[in-house]
Image 1: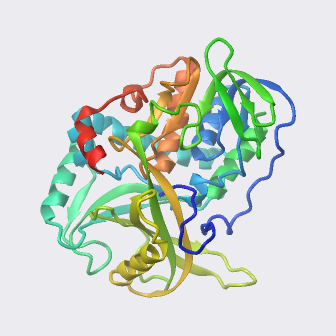
Image 2: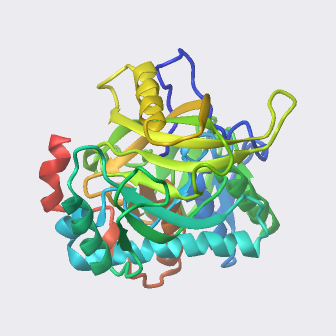
Length: 417
């Protein structure tokens, strides 16, 4: 889950557990014209991943952020690092074929490994942790749902996935187990990326919203106050693209998703990622929260879901209440609700991100959008794929995430959604 939006429930914008449990690095606004090899718009996980991997290749990088570091999507994710596709492998195989499903598995797996390598190489203290993921049945769903998903996941290359008659938590029934998942504190991670970028000589500017993106012979950007950054390449990593008003917006739709954090007795719920087969589905993880002057140290069960298309509902209080009722009916040892937040997810037409050359932005403009609920891995895939495109390297995922694609087999369901 990712996004930045007013939840509509309490009359003010909510903040996530990450936003008030870690300091965010501060940077100055852009106050002069600059020249760079690459200018990146957006300082969430996608933009900072692109910037970091290009800076590590010796490129002169400038990052421009309209607000603060990680203040939007990345600060509102639940930070599941997963190669278990939200729309599920059976759907990806249907709309993109067996090869597409295989490439999706390989790229999301590589994204988790890339994050793990960056955490290790840069010594980032972001609570990165390896764990299993479990997909269990929603009420009324048949085991056939699990069987078909297992077959598709294994066909995509996830050979270690398996079906269990009972998951790690009694009462949830049969489930699929997916080893090799991970979780982390997303804002501590992007803070570590910022520190690494500064060491590598990249320049980061906050409170510097971009007004114009140019491709073609003189690529670059202009901020709202008239500052210019000329570059050989421009990367638009703003979740909803600001460079392309037509070509991509028609192929993705915004959804609101809701999250609560409930106090949890230690040791009652096994540490893992959990999802169910509902539509919209629920997603669950655990998080330890350090004590403060106002509250003692505690553990949270972070529960998300109750998604709806943006603009089609204004009942945030009911959504949070429904999440709480769902969680209390399935997980023991729960105390009070300590956290509530919401965010916006951009669902692409086929459940995979749009990453690559911007079809409406002109030459030398690249875009990363369509996180489809998997912003942590899609953002990291963007870092690896756009790095290769800028450097002129071949990348096996280029066609899978090509922003100009038109997967016709997915169009019917997308329009009905």
